[in-house]
Image (cartoon, rainbow, N blue to C red; front, side):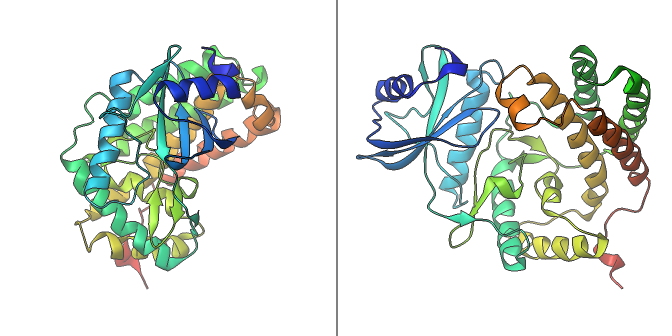
Length: 322
């Protein structure tokens, strides 16, 4: 089955092979890494089917994702759950792996709501408690040295950076990479969502966590820092609010705040490499037309240099409120 040519008829056949039937309303949802479709099933209600991009994760790695989500749901964490058929929740059709999820009837998460941020902190703490006992051993942990090396190779191999900017870009990338490796020194790891931002959250009597495609082990702060925005004082208020909820359930190690800027830098580099790697997928040039422009890469050189400088500034600390 061609991953890039998933027609409604093929999707119907794949779902039917797992005993799940589309009655109406099949609609593609916004997703670049995987192919995701929402539909109405007479027997199971509103569902979401997720067809995994080939060769990104192995069957066993995806099964660990599904096991982690199922365990979190069993412990009361508000997560979208995979649908099971005869104890199985990962299916295969025509060589493609797919899962089906119960739709969460909810509205968008409001990142500027302090009440919602506090409730999110509590849910993330509950997730991290579950993560303590889940090794996620087959999924790669957060490993800056290996990730930076891979990202650099992708950016060099795919030649998306204008020739006259390549020297400056890779100098800036090398400088930032050295700083990330130096300053990323986590002391404690747990199972994480891994990509916790507002686009992967919904709100219905509390926050709901969606899309665990990037779940892995790492420091707890990885699931917190992407919810921080604005100037330093705004971020301190948001952080204080998140931790007010978090620490009702699980202790947070304040030393992890020093990991925020290394993690931010790593995400910047991985994002550029991800776009370069996927550029041959027709969906990407259409969605990110600015990616192969000289202006974009000029901006990235500046951003990399600024991020390298940020590594040496004092980290966020709630003891600095004044």
